[in-house]
Length: 411
Image (cartoon, rainbow, N blue to C red):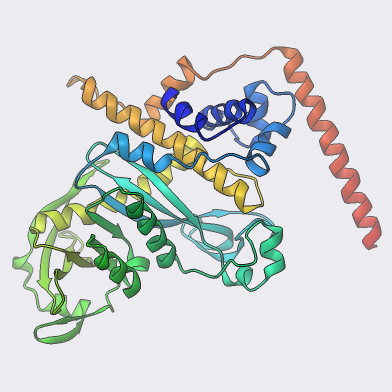
């Protein structure tokens, strides 16, 4: 925690927000059943949530150094940048970026907020290094609504692949290196994203739909039609990486694509040897690489799902109760830092103190439990608890009176 606090301290001039940033990160890692400005402020020993709310919404500070922290401690020359989006179900329509849209979190169309994340995945571990809020056209076409949410009138609509390209470009322009980019069909089917990566000399293994068309020396084919021309016995059984129940073995085949430009372009086909289900990937590498490398990169895509699960379950990535863009950005950034702390501690423990055969290596979940028990478990007296009870009741009374006045005026 001291290393993160040191990084943040250099970007914050005043001591009060510097202290509150540390408290908020620790609060995100606490075992509070619900995590927001109110609960974390009470947990941290403050008398009201005003300071935490000011930190997220109005204070002048910049703690957006999560990328440098992650790359420094999880560095890997063959790291994979994984792009994907996740949605958070919300209520109301005033929270920035919210509209009725599909979210995989709920598995259906809901009033939700969607963001695209960039995860750095290496052999030592993985953590998110950047994020971009997806702002729908219903927002960008309404300057007044954007202004009220702190977006700015110049905000223009950007697709999820465009947000992904923006983050990858930002990562590379900062001087960091990553050999590969992985993503699902939303990103693999976008030619502009693929072109951006090829121009930067960055390899990719991006999933595409079965209807995606590719060009070979024999002509243009749909991916599923091309797969039918590959004999089943031509596939190689390789692991896409270890999962919760062991290695994930599939049958893999690769087909070279026709393209006069420099670099190697291929279609990677994955077959589930038990169900026969197929998946397809567009691949690019500046120089030829073996099939095992493409399979490793394809398997790295699941790291982003692990980040979403851990980031939400351990660091409250999705529990923000804020409306404006600046507040959302700061909450999410600090949640990413909190998760990155767990990932870095895990990596360091695995390298310095390997677990004996009778124990599994330390997990992020177990590190959080130890952190709560040994470091971040504050104890407050009854007066503090009663003071917060009175504060909540006063706030709720004001809110109730305000609702009644508004209702009476409308009637």
